[in-house]
Image 1 (cartoon, rainbow, N blue to C red):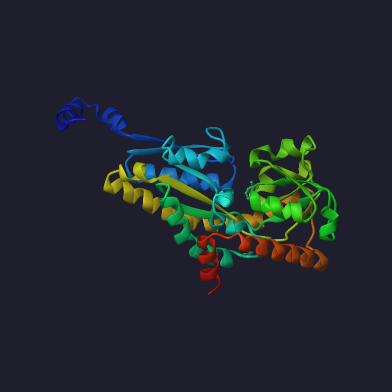
Image 2: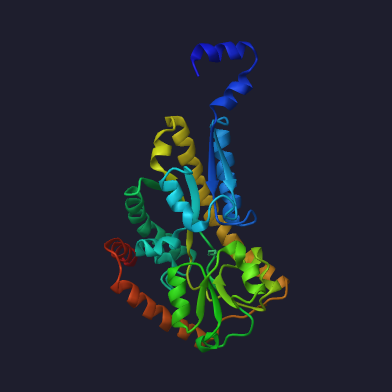
Length: 323
Ligand code: PCA
């Protein structure tokens, strides 16, 4: 809008209308529901950007896969169908193992390790995404992943033959190695998949268990803390470059705050949501030594297979993580 016209509008008292006309409106898809702490966090991110830019950049969150299917979000950002979005980083494990290293059993099982792993992973993820003209803005972990079942599991063999809900390639391999039958199901579809009998066990966080009301269809939870996977918020580089400098700074500042806040929220969730599971009648059972040993063996086997097919980027991550 021309300066003169702008001035005329101001004089006419139409400043609000003129600001609204200049506002950049962005749609931001996420596969996860509104109650999910990641979604609460990105809504705060959008609010922060809106406040810092006086409404010039107005980001609308579309939750639970309502705008785009999980598997389509990354490519939609790439083609600028949407400028920004959130997804499960390990969903790209098939594209490059570097994206899925945080979904390997027993590599990083605590928040401390997860933070170290992200520090090692981030430069490689940045490089890989840059080739697609994408930029990671921030990444937030889910609470450590636990085992949900319809009976008590004393050893890995007890899972043989179970129909197992999966969310990415590494979890699928894990389920196959324990002799279960994996099926890929998105988080919002979990309740229906269980009630219709498509699946009967899963590995996910206390957050997703509580958000999907796991007590309606599951009886046992075992905090095996197998891995600490992450979501990532990715932006299209051209969309970002098209913003003026002050707006770019607002986005980067809000992203840094969201990453910090998200890690804190995740840690709080781990305790709070485990309690919610128990309060709603799920038996929370510490894994037996036998089960732990079984899982460690399967984890080692998976890691070996993974290393045999690891990309140069993935190898770099492992080396820098192990240092
Ligand atoms: N919840 C998501 C990803 C990992 C998690 O804890 C899910 O189950 O799909």
